[in-house]
Image (cartoon, rainbow, N blue to C red; front, side, top):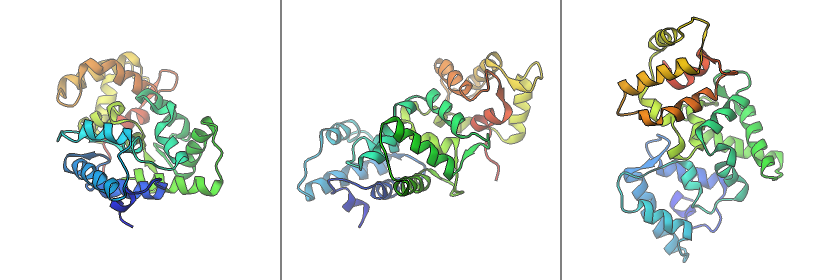
Length: 262
C-alpha cells in the first residue's frame, strides 16, 4: 500500500503514519513545507473523496490554514492533529508535558540520565512508557517496543540508532521548537570552546544565568536573521532547563550551540 492509499483509511496505524510522513517529507529535513505541503493537502483531499469520506473538521481547518499559502511549515506534531491515527500512538504528540521548549528541555534532562547527549532505544522506551502512564493508558510491552522502533525510524535523521536533542525536539510543535532557530548559528567545536571560555567569566567551568544572558544577547546581535532578541527570555529559560541547579556545563550548552563535526 502507498502513502496515498493510507490517507483513505478510517484509522491509520502507527506504521502507516510513519510511511505517510516519510513519503511527504521528501527531503528528509523533518518538516513538510512548500511543495511537499501542497502535495500532501492535494492528495489528502483526493484520497478522502476517493474513499467516499468527507474531510474531518480538523482536516478542513488545516486545509484552510495551509492550502493557500506557499510559506507554510508543519512538523510531525501538526500532522498528528489531523490524521485519524491509532489513539495510543497519538498521545505521544499530544502530551501536555511537551507543550513548550522549557518543558521539553526538562524532559530531555530526565531521560538522558547518563548525560551522553543522546537518548538510546531503552531510554526512549522508558520515556514513551511514562507518557502513556501519565495519560492512564496501559500498553503491552510488544506494542511499546513497536512504537519505540517507529519513533526511532521517524526521528533518527542520521540513522545512528539513537536520538539527539534536535531530533527528539521534533515532538514539539513547530512554533515552540526554538532549536530550529539555533540550527543556523551553531559553531564548530573550536569556536564553541572559545566562546564558552569567554563567557565563563569567572572560569569556574560552567555558565550561570547572567553569563548565558550576555552570550545570548551577543548571538542575537550577530544573527538577527535567525534569532529575535525579543525572544531572549524564552531562549534563556529553555536553555537553563538543561542546567544542573543553575549551572550550565559545557556539554549541555554544546547540545544547543555546537555543530557536529563529521
